[in-house]
Length: 164
Image (cartoon, rainbow, N blue to C red; front, top):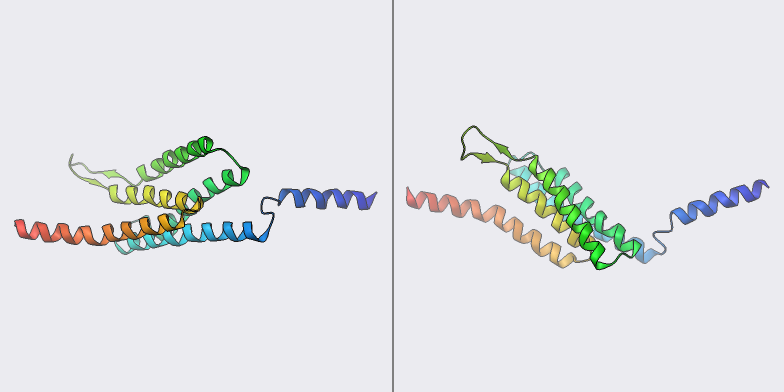
């Protein structure tokens, strides 16, 4: 009787951890989550270097979270239509997170945090891309974002000096 009880417990644990049935699936999961974390971390590092409050950890967590939100349904075998609803939910949820970074000053024209909010939103999209196995797209988007975040302020500064 005791052996039967332990066998039931072991079978239950094996069944509960069966979402990764083989080494290939484990490698796929690890690779996608690590890529999401790395790319989110790169964007977060750039923001941290600019003195912004949403830095490396925030961006990494957003990217991993977004990747996981699409990885789990993929593992469950949901349809493309259902996946589009998952992605819509991620977009809306991260929109609320980004909204928390936007601060409107007393001056009607002074709003801070829009770039940070957009960066968090973009980081979630990069996480979704990585989670869905579109690693090259995620990497290219991250590089483009880093280019925008580093070059555009320099161009804006150069243009404002030419005007004044």
